[in-house]
Length: 396
Image (tube, rainbow, N blue to C red):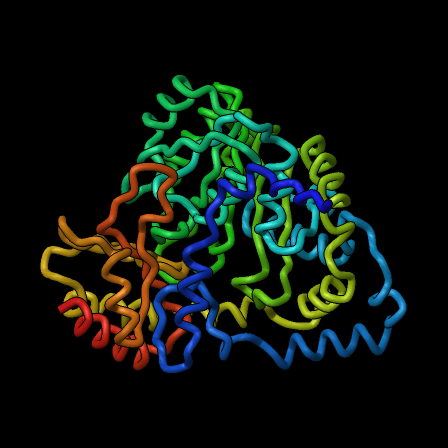
């Protein structure tokens, strides 16, 4: 007799896979022009500079580069990240940061440190899909907070906190995924004040903040938190994926000391530390190269690609559709007229070798079936024009 193996954990069975990842798999054919994935343009990677940094590290200090490292992260890389934050208006010391394996791990670590099964987590409506997965796996009850083109509505947030007694609020305030919208400065201050007054943690996810190519920068919620008395309950996470290369899988977490210690313990259980050689190479790259000059080139290219997408949407989408005009980031959020279902329509669209992401998976509840996300950064303006022609043909 042989007994059956125990079943998988309940939390795993209750969380669906990412539709975005599935769409990327289905549209991996080279002939497909995909507006689906939030993939940085690979031709804009500074491959030579990054390769040189890896070579130098492996030639000059191979034993250190190939050895185990501390969980907190390479001191030089933490110092470089702290310096950039300070220069951008958020005074930060290296020991306030934890290096993570991508910002997704930072989100997972904070969730592990803060969220118990049954805790309420507030999110934007719509919300970054992988965050919904992360909170779902933690056993949280996820509640959406409505907003508009300026992001989360502070009055709705106050009401949700009063009604739900949540543990934390998760926001992507700058060029949000999936909508591309940016939370206004006034609302950022209001979020910090609600957190201080109501005893709420805030996770501020900022992977796109340095991809601004129009308008003026807006301070982080973390910057407002000090004045609002919420500095002890605000965690800022970010990534090198969008400003250097996603394959490096490098991110960081800035958090109050108690939370940072808890996340460090959680990271020890997860992967011990982020790969040493990658950290050292990234620190060397930042020391030897002008990242801001590189970002200027990236932002210029992304601006042209955004403009190409916006210029063609009126002809590509059905009459009565609407969309926003983000000042940076990677995404445009569109809404088709009532009666359309972008999930069902995608089945036909992909047969024309073009793709988008339906908006429904980005909602914690009550999805809007008429919405969709379009990424403009992966393809050139000419390819975007071609893709929009295919999309128009499919939607007709």
